Image (cartoon, rainbow, N blue to C red):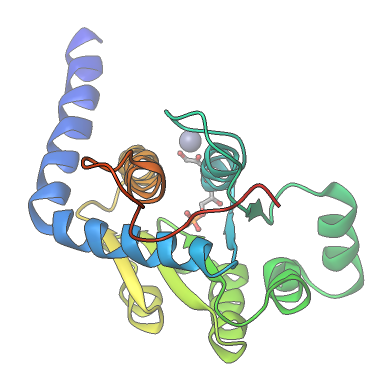
Length: 205
Ligand SMILES: O=C(CO)[C@@H](O)[C@H](O)[C@H](O)[C@H](O)COP(=O)(O)O
Ligand SMILES: [Zn+2]
């Protein structure tokens, strides 16, 4: 049994190592994209199923509350949290509509959709990405090796080099944390020299 336990940890580490070899510059690019969207008064919508629903909620909470810095909240909503909304859309229409309908209703052009699916084949995720693109959102996919179709319909795709759902999720949550950290640093770092910061950040509302 211990051998299996050690192997699970080693696999998780090795998937993360492979992922970061290929994705560091994309993470930097997407961090800037998200920071620019917040600067423009836009928000992030996140969604996923099962463990990825928890990842979406977890990442939204880091933005709305704080990650490492004491700073104003940044607008992010997880679309997998409201039981009344989720059950009524599923009951009256279809489970595959739960995120698409919320994206259509709650977003505005320029917002960012972070869609999380390890398989890349969950219908509710694919439909929501289609709606997000039609509405003029920038779409970011978090997926795994089997998620080609999902990755190719999204503007930016983080493809974790594994087809094992838990191992993929373990990289996704690290990715979410690192994006939060980078966005905080871009928006709230103290300027090194005295003088005004490059952009003014007023999220105090
Ligand atoms: O957390 C896990 C597995 O680690 C599960 O709950 C998993 O998220 C569920 O099976 C999801 O329905 C999988 O959906 P997806 O990632 O393929 O879109
Ligand atoms: Zn899980």
